[in-house]
Length: 268
Image (cartoon, rainbow, N blue to C red; front, side, top):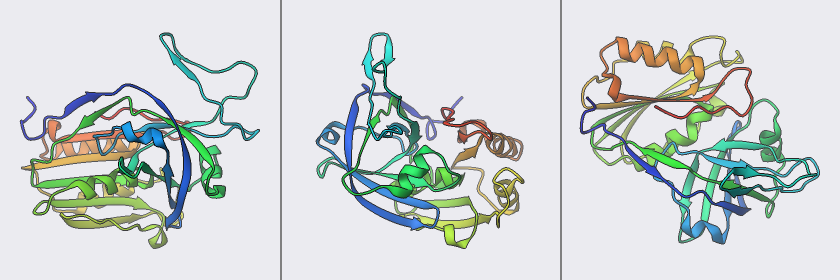
């Protein structure tokens, strides 16, 4: 049975496609770029889970922002035009009054989203859809363990920004080097371990697991969240389950899968 403290709340939202314009570009590190968007349609935007994800539609190769229609039969694109690249991102920096929203792009191997983020200019347009729903994790425990790679840093940063004073957060973040470290502001007492790859491939070793195994972490009054590559998530999840943590206190999300483009597995 899930403990009352760690029982998640599921919320469903109506899906709406929103056109947004680039208002600000900021490099948080050499591998993470924050882009702030604005648009009147954001006045009704909802996102209650720190690791929510929205679909982002990018202009196609012709520079057109081709958007689908959402109907009873699902999503349908106009015929005769190239479909947009679509990727999923965690919304952060949400300001409904100011009608702005921030997305943080991990700058890694070339792809349509990375290429767009590298070359983005103020005023350019994208569109977003979602989130479809949220799995809201409680903030009633005293200890939070957050484990993830670059792709999960936006969710980790958002979670830390929400944690209350008096709580403790243990962050394990996999990045390539010191140049990829980002600020982790929080009212909580934050203890950070950076797991450096030093040029090695992201899935060539269990960089996060090795650091977690060496740490002294609370097993009671705790919430564990994991977000990274699919097989890395499985290894970390199994380690926590087999070393004193209740399964209901360990939540996880596969943010990508080696060899698979545009992959995202819902969290559990």
